[in-house]
Each structure stands twice: as structure tokens, then as C-alpha cells.
Length: 171
Image 1 (cartoon, rainbow, N blue to C red):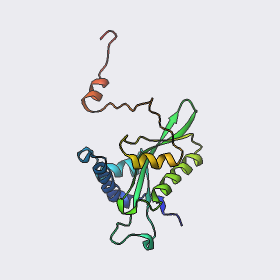
Image 2: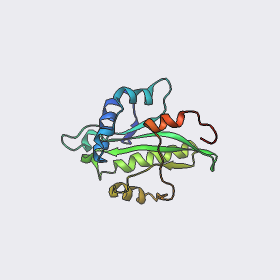
Image 3: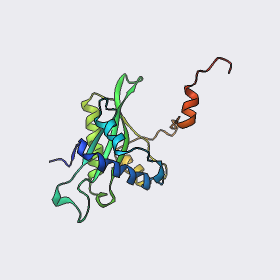
Image 4: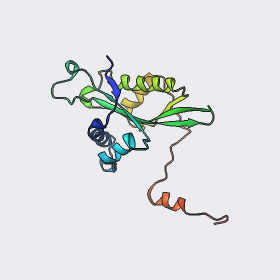
């Protein structure tokens, strides 16, 4: 039996806890503004915008004292005009420290690759911090290719508000 399953509403608190753990690992613990209610709405509300899968090994494969849920992946569908097909954007892939090196990260990642294929998608894409060597090495083992010439851009906060204002030619 696979240790990977679709998340349920009962998993939201644990997913939120792992989002906070991931932010701490990524050296930005104060960046998480999402609440469990926000995640519940995004994953299971009337208009879900994301999906999640959970890594939950059998009790016999859990380290003593470790949580039952070992990790998660949060993702959503994208679209490529170049391919003319959908894809999946991997927002988070996180495995708790007690479970690292057990193959659960690979199980989550392979599950996502199978979803892309089953949905007749063209790509699985994500970003990883340039200093996160364990993650970069993990993805490289799967044959992932880095696109350094395509840096991520983000518009948020006051800059997003300003960009939403009507712009007139010449201004």
C-alpha cells in the first residue's frame, strides 16, 4: 500500500503546521500569514485553488515519537501556451526531519509526476532556494533541469496595489 494519499479536511491543521515548519527551515519563519482556515478554503472550499497529498507511513514504519503524517505536497494546475497543455506547479514539498532519507519525499514527488501524466500534462515545475543543497540534489536525482535564465518574479503588497491602478499612456 502506498504511503501517499490525497489530503482531507481533517489534515488541514497538520498541513498548516508543516507549512510553518518549512518556513522555519527556509529561514523565514515570520512569512507565513496563512491560517488553517485559509488553507481549508484553498484546498476544500467552494472554489478550491490547490490540492494536497500526504505522506503517511504505516505505524510500523514510524520512528518513535514521530508524528503520523510525515510530509506533504501542495500543488495546483498551470498551463503552458508553448505546450498547449496543463502542468502542475509544486508549491511545497516537505518531509519532516524524522522521516528524511526514508523514501517518502521520492514517493510524494513520483506521485505528482504520475498525476501530471494522468492529467495529460506536459510539466511539473517548482522553485527551490539556491542554498538548499539537499533539495537541489534531490530534484537533480530525478533528472530535473534548472532554468537559471528564467528568474522568478513576484508582485505583492503595495506594489500589487499600485500595479492594479489604471495606467495611462505616457505616465
